[in-house]
Image 1 (cartoon, rainbow, N blue to C red):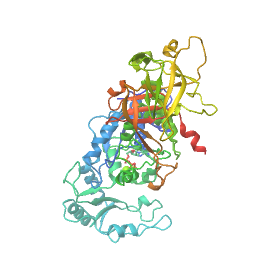
Image 2 (image 1 turned 90 degrees about the vertical axis):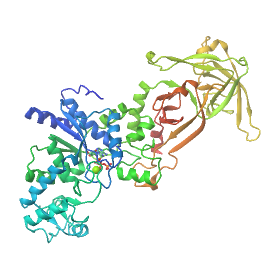
Image 3 (image 1 turned 180 degrees about the horizontal axis):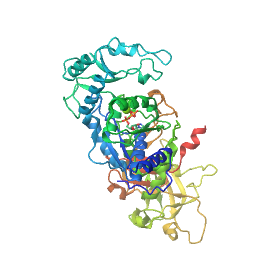
Length: 550
Ligand code: ATP
Ligand code: MG
């Protein structure tokens, strides 16, 4: 659980300033909530909302609840609700009390709706969904009043009760607020408050066959729970007049203050659950937890530390400006966190045999390797070294291009934690012509990589022991979409996943547990997956920044 950082006297964004001013005036405490709909898995946009809601409550000594906005039984499930709880905890947040559900308040909401009908502020409309849609009007043209709008209150009360008792099929009637069909705000043109849905609800089972709409349920749930500040994204700004109308006409015990902020959008990905669900359903990705997905599940499997995601949300900040954030910022946060916390290890992606001709056969030396260059507390480990090693294919060039600082005929290179070796010759595969073995000699006086005579060795490369290394599958990722503002699956980056089947890892990595993260020297940060593979979390440097321009 995240402990509220000691956010100083000056609140860092406009919402925190408003909340502080409100609390100074009322002397009360802030009550916020995170209200996901259990119709999919949480994504990084939700993380922004959580960091804000749990953050504001934590910093001001208030409380934040987790409440499932479960008003649409057709799309929601327990599986999603369970996963959401798990993801909220994983991100480092704990909620006040038991998770709540909008459906916990269905009886109270029904009472409020009943009150609206009796006072003439709501009516049962018997038009079809299509008729209602067609008479709503447009931004420039007013809507048309329903023929049932002036139905007597007693008749509506009776129909509403019979809707509840299951007498009518789906779509036969709806309950609508009686506001203004000519309003410039479409949300105020007699919005639907209840609809009939004969469906089993994941939380209330078959207790109800009428369900409140999102707007009616959301504002009343907040009011019933005594939420002081309903923090939501900008698209609900236009709904605020409706929420005010509902609060004015139902008079619940508390009146939350709604403040809108801009949603998080990330380049090269999509964010809405609907579009993420499409990627899953059409098989473009391997489920919601595919490491390329912007879901918290995906990021977890990819190896993103929760602290990095929180750091990212803080750096993005809270404003009212619509924007799209570069993926590079998120990756920077991930790198910063992993540079601090991930132990180092060696793996070779595309192995090339290196034989040290003057090294005794059958001898394996255990060399000391520090787990972290700047953190002695991270300890050290032994890495086996011998006559036959595997190095990265691209660390050798038979005919080195200018600027190449690694191994080439006649050149020296330092083997990380090992010796300085000199390439004497190489062999090629007679079939393909590809280099198959690099033959070297090693200078025994350079154990640990130091040259006692102070001679200059320009390159240092990583390696593993040919005899002792373990095989491993490494998965490398690129942007899920090839363009910054994707419109659909047609913009998917076909090269977003590269599976390297025959990599080799140092033996200490064989014991890595799923979820453990490492820096594979020079290759990037990797996270052990549930299978024996490792997923590349992020490269060591931002390789994308250069590519963006051209
Ligand atoms: P989606 O469009 O992905 O389905 P949603 O808003 O329908 O998102 P909810 O489950 O209703 O998803 O969202 C729960 C909370 O998370 C809401 O308060 C919502 O405003 C917030 N939220 C969702 N997406 C973002 C985002 N991209 N940036 C910030 N907050 C978000
Ligand atoms: Mg929603």
